[in-house]
Length: 124
Image (cartoon, rainbow, N blue to C red; front, top):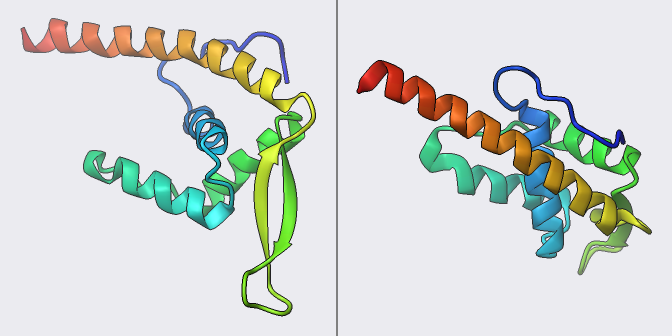
């Protein structure tokens, strides 16, 4: 993971947005993939945004590669063979997550200002 995020020039990329929420949900201990997907879909349903399965898992895999999260496999309760993959912070991952969130906050502020300008310039 790089030390500084570079702005995309326009608005925030979907993957960065999802990674931010996946970090926050992991902090809140909502830990397995399908649950994370369900929570994200429910949270953003009022806004017409429905993240797809592959993008959520790509974002989770990015967080693993960045050393922020790790996978922990556990047997599904009441099932003999079925396992569920939970996501937890890797060693040192919480500090990396805090850094990522700080960097993304600056990018979100920039995007919000860009959107406010567009609304003011075109609808005032």
